[in-house]
Image (tube, rainbow, N blue to C red):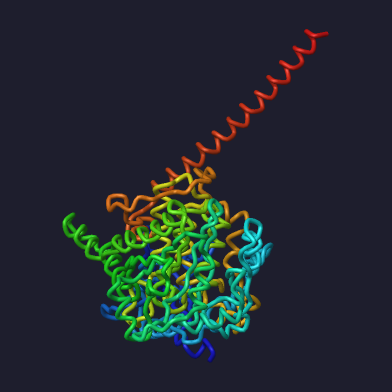
Length: 550
């Protein structure tokens, strides 16, 4: 298929663009295979807007006489309005945008056509391979090994080719355990706590069914993580009721009779369409400027977004507490182990591990616990908060994780190397990007379509010094301690930087942030001068001492 077939009207003149915080601009609208471009009539012909079609969530059309208006609602929650003279032109452009923003073939998307204008210093596709992560682990313990049992993606289609498992468990045992776990997702290492050697593993639900099916290799695998005389905790992200209902469909949970050294705790975390509906309600409330205070607060509460944040953070804190304070190992799973499980394991690591609070450490965490762990980004991020075409796969699981990270960052503003802009950038690229990092649902799909050869990694762009400087937190001071966020309702706040950024100007906040940066830089300069003067003083005192002794 040629893009030209979908573009009925490639260009329109005298189009007026309305967007948040900018004056209306008249110019020429151009449609390409991947972008909607509006160029103003200014002498320098500076482009006023470049919008990826993949960032378009929904469009609406209105007509007053022969003047047509297209309202574009974006996945990054922006709303843009285009006034187009001529009804036919407007209809043609609207239908072209609809077709180009809902392409069936992923290989027609922009990352496969994008060519970077910057020098690629680091290939992000190779920055966080499992082998590199395993090197870090093997420097502190020799109880684990890197298994390539899944190198052809035949044991578990949603796992990467290499996974970390206990050294005492061979590949044949792993194959047997895979047949006992939903989707073949056998327990693998998620995190090793250097302080006490305790670990966090993740998997999917066991397929016990109504007959109470058993698998001795499964017990042996998770028991291999326990110290002598110690118990472990299984954190199931479903309610007990939902877990029991799963048995009727062939799923289930670990029975204490078969896993006597493990205590099972149910911490219900919502998933799928419940989260999607929550996002839709929240964005609708944020965009409605006509509320009085009571109506705004009731709509915010009705969305349940902050309730979901509280549930996720509470479960993550529990996992971290079991490891750090109870000195126990933990296994986390829900049903598939690709959504709420990953929220819990990754947030627990942010609480426990200072490395995950650095920029590269956080990138490694996203790679390890989300991309390589098989979170289905293509399905979950297909639509954002505005789309009318609902499929049951969309869900803001990764978005909620980023919001939880922001909540912790807000409570510990000096403990993170990255700032809020870094989290917002990840949210935007998960939904629409020129990079291939968040395409497809797992490593198997990315490998089949040769993404590392055909597309650019987001990390190749982010980790360039000129980009990194935008994402650095000026208040950062490395903190080697475990950080315990408060999950009390009054401690959790609406993430204004995302949900209100298109509704009210951040000009004054940006100015304050810049002033804070200037003060911190000036303080560093003064500190350097103080250190230099101290050195000079020490040298003078040394010289005086030598003269007196002579």
